Amino acid sequence: MRKIISIFALATLLAVSCQTGEKEYVCEEPIKPVGVVSGLGDDDLLELVQKQTFRFFWDFGHPVSGLARERSNTVKGAYYWDYINEAWDKPNFSEHTYGPEAIAVGGSGFGIMAMTVAVERGWITREAALNRLHKIVEFLLQAETFHGAYPHFMNGETGKPITFGRQDDGADIVETSYLMMGLLTAREYFNGDTPIEQYLRGKITQMWETVNWSWFEKDGKLFWHWAPNHGFDMNFPIYGWNECLITYIVAASSPLFPISKDVYESCWKAGEGYRNTKEHYGITSPLGDWGESLCGPLFFEHYTFQGIDPNGLVDEEGVHYYEQGKAHTLLHRAYAIANPNNHKGYGANCWGFTAGDSNKGYVAHDPGTDLGVIQPTAALSSFPYTPEESMEVLRHLYYDLGDTVWGEYGFVDGFNPETGWASNTWLAIDEGPIVNMIENYRTGMLWKLFMNIPDIQRGLTRLGFTSPYIK
Image 1 (tube, rainbow, N blue to C red):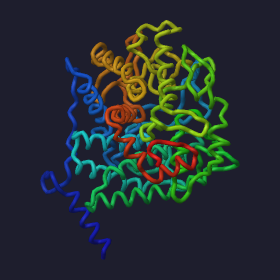
Image 2: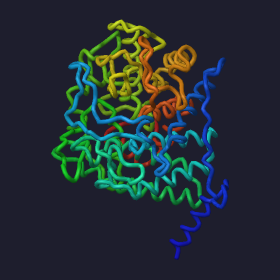
Image 3: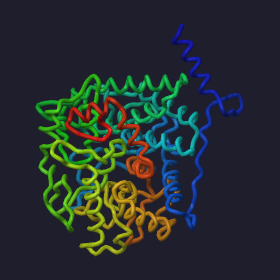
Image 4: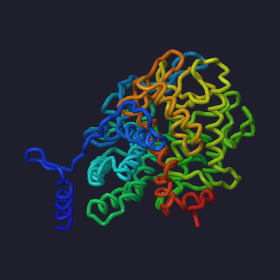
């Protein structure tokens, strides 16, 4: 009887605010796009960029699941351009066509975080956000999982996995860690006593406690993938340094199925390129030895640190993670200023390389994989590390390049300043960090929410981190 009453109470809560014909529901008013507006101050420009970028998750969110679509266009195949060999790299090639039904699990986590920002800044109402979050949570509870973990992509209507590669049709714990970061942030933010908020917090906790992170720990390694038909055949241990620090932190934070510190030491820290002592352009980043490529893509410093505050975060070896993020970012800027390949348009106001769309397709850009393409998310998501330098890029993109790179969901995913090519596409994993990292630069809101979660503090402590949040 109690369950029946709670269901009717929840339905009543959702059936408020708007009415169309005989149907009542919570309004999800669209956010109107804005063109280039002259004379904006820095704070107003940051607000506009965040808000218009958030439209990707709000107005372009999947109509059934409410989750984030992987991208705004349709592409065929999951593969990367091999810059060195001038060929498509297809070791795990998928013939699948990724269209509007494809949900990005990790990108959805970023979008959920962005939704809390949108409520706090008044772009959407709290009631509308709760309505969307309810749709998302109910869908995720019914979606197919593997030992509690979600796949890389899934169908936004059915909740079934969409094959990312021939052996990658099961669990992806990296994408799952991004999703959990978003859900846990929402659980912290929506902390009211209303029935719907209590209900959502309980369901998010249920999903969080169900993920069996320890299942993916095998032979002293933590594996990225597992699938029912292939087991661990992908054979992809999660070595560092890259975007996966959050995976280890979240997995170590699990209240029921945590990974051991031993696997963090023997796998994550055992990567050949983990520590770095090389100097380039007078800059040395503590982590990430990429040889002549200088450093990896900038998303390494964005994905994890939407929730994890790098300020004052130090590991047992004395690595300061704010300094790591700043050095990595400044290396990208220094490379663009030096411009060894003589690409037109590079400079102090136009830099930043990360994974995203190019005229060759989706490419993991970095200084060693330089196709002349700039990803706006690279510099814009780096605001917490390089506020003045990132603002110089932002003003160049918005005022100098304008409509060439500015569109309905903010800045396009990639552009080539030399040829004038622009992608006219938007990707969830690039859009989310723009909203979230700019917010952390402005207010630290997401850091405060995520870092104050007791489970996360225990996980950080378990791995040997210290932080001002951990007393």
